[in-house]
Image 1 (cartoon, rainbow, N blue to C red):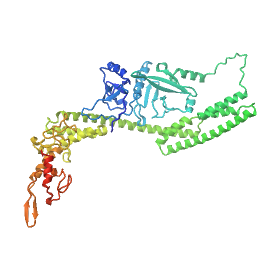
Image 2 (image 1 turned 60 degrees about the horizontal axis):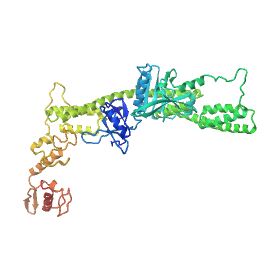
Image 3 (image 1 turned 180 degrees about the vertical axis):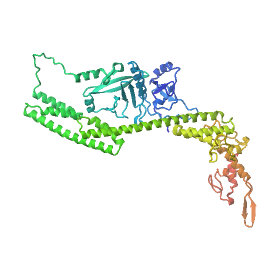
Image 4 (image 1 turned 120 degrees about the horizontal axis):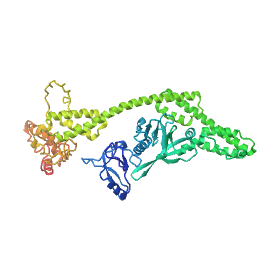
Length: 583
């Protein structure tokens, strides 16, 4: 995975699993004050932000915005973080949880719960569920999850980027929205109320209340009052208010019809058409306008009726084939655009879809609970892997060999249970310790005896560092890490403590073993007619000489000379000695 180089603007205080977010100031002069204010605090790439859990540092710039940055890796490797959201809005779900909990406590709801829901595995922070004894809210901060308007106990509250169709506004009278804006190093919350053909009105959270209808704002109270009571006539009982004349009423209906068609509201268009049909006592020109508008509206309603029939047919087909991925968006669209005047058949289709979705939701919740348990076990195993690796780095060299091998066995078991919870670098360290302990062969992985039983004795193949005496470990340069003669190998796989390895790389040891083996081989006999002669031993091993190009036969690196027996030319040996005088 490549590191994400986008600038990090949010973090959490105190620890990786903290729920206390904060925003870093963008300007250098503000960052100085921020550092003084948080002199004794630590900042983390929080797990609830989707981060890696590593500590962060503040970066001050005068030519660009300031931001958080990961602390460098102890081994000097680049820090890899899979966090997706890094901007100022990436911690909004934490701010919502904190504000909602404080708001509910102030109204006597001490046992209220605020959770970060993840339906269908959506990213953490898209949905926030707020529950108390008398009701609940589901806050949609983005469009990842479509709002469910008919879900009991979850009144939707939409972020400013979440769309809502006009029919829903007409059917529900209003919807709530949530907005967050930055103030210093925190985010403030406002609640908005949006109604059909009305601008959204915004209020502070303290201006909102919980009622039997759910979340209520001053705008909600005005909307409910206007819908529930008839306006009081300003005229006295003895006076009669003059009704608008027919031409004026006709022009008003035409304007309402145009607005309803613009927002594609079937309910309002049908209602206005009935009003147009009832208009009389107008001149021929106005009557022609009304008839033309009515005919156009009727054609539009017929088209919408056909779209509605097709929509319910697709939903019924999806329910019959158990296509959950098709049922869910179709049911949301049906509830949003075709919730009025349903026939018995349409209601039956919607009920069947709702039952199927509910069953699928229960199955998914059961699977999610099992996955959560497995995930928790894998996370514990990954922590165990890191603990065992740290113990091996500290005590691996001083431990008795059998004790070290037992620790490595525990490490291998924990790594298998952790699965992909450990990163590639940790996996490489596990494999290195497995090889170092001699557990990388099938015989070494044999099942251990039960407690109280004696294990059969098995002849073990000596490891490479056991086949070479310690004084000869570093006589040759290392072909893997480039360490010079008489110098320890670099710790490039993290199996030792510090920047140098306690044991040389296997490639370095194999170099010594191969050279000794070539010296121990008897000289080759070359035939020349009826006579034979003994080939004297070469001054260096043949695989070293062939690393250079031969001046006589132009044999390239890695290729042998074209002499009898492939013995290298003397000019090639001289060139090799000139290039590698210490060999």
